[in-house]
Image (cartoon, rainbow, N blue to C red; front, side, top):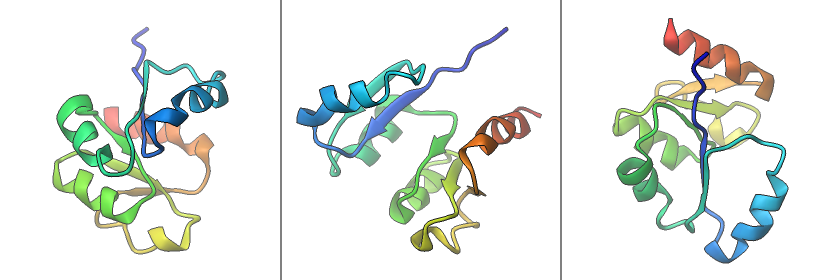
Length: 105
């Protein structure tokens, strides 16, 4: 069975990385980078180059879409309404596996 890699890139400052790693111990991820707000877009597009992004910031949803990266975004935030042209909305985290399966089909 093929496993997917999960790389976490967060806009929180690098000095918070230890606390973020502790918060995410239950999640089976490949790497965690706390890069700060200004570097997040560049790091994801140029270094991580993911097959898909999960993002909630409208400007980054648009940027990743523009870079050819499919984006899933939570639709429960008022600020993500109307982003359908740039990504795929989801209403609950348990929908993510199904969205991945649809991508592979």
